[in-house]
Each structure stands twice: as C-alpha cells, then as structure tokens.
Length: 144
Image 1 (cartoon, helix red, strand yellow):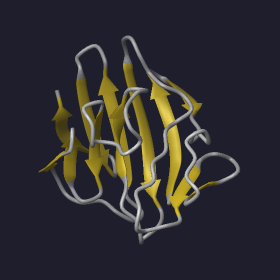
Image 2 (tube, rainbow, N blue to C red; image 1 turned 90 degrees about the vertical axis):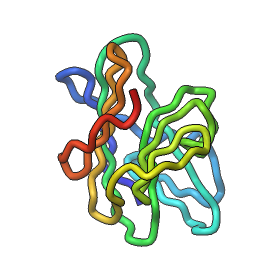
Image 3 (cartoon, one colour; image 1 turned 60 degrees about the vertical axis):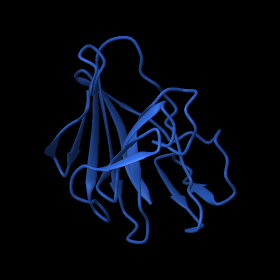
C-alpha cells in the first residue's frame, strides 16, 4: 500500500489525490484518495495523481510504503505515458528494487526501499533535473 501523497509547489502545500480514472479491477483506492493498493501480486497496477505539473518551477511529492508485501515505483511521466511507469520513454522512475528505469532500461541506482520507507520525488523543470530522496536523505541526481 502507498500512502501519504502530497505535492509541494514552491512553498505551498496542496493535497493531491490518487486518480480513480485509471481503473483496474485488482487495484483498490481508499475513499479519501490518499492510498492505493494492488490486490493481485501477479500483475502490475499503477496510479497517477489528480494533478500534473508543467511549464517552469520545482515540484515535490512523497509516498510512504505501508504494505510489507509490495514493491513500488515512484516517479514522473507525461500524460501519454503508459501506466506501467518506466517502461516507455515517457516516464522516469525509482523502484523499490533499487533500480532506476526509463524506456524498459532498468539500471542499478541505489538502495532498495520497502515498508515504512518514505520516498520523495523532486523535479526541477527549469534545470531539467529529477532527484529522489529516501527517508529525507538525498539520493543523487537520477535523471538530468
């Protein structure tokens, strides 16, 4: 289960919900839209936020993995990206297996993450950089 989604836009905070428009029968989204979970460990399930970012600026969100039985991918994509984040050339991801991914290229990146870890995802659209944080610790520039 992924929980605690929010977006930091410069210095103000807004609650961003998990979209219910991408529908998989094996995915559950709680009633407040702040948590989602795959109900089938044999298939990949994805989710997107209800808000996007574009233009200029710096944006940030966090997820906390609360289920010990799952693996998550966290990152950024454009609206036309497939929901299986990191498997096309429209999204960038840091996965729970410790790999970064873009266009089905899964490369070793850093340490794994799992239950009770909080992953922060930062994008700087002015400098075209993406950074990830694990439990508030900076994990290098992942994509430039």
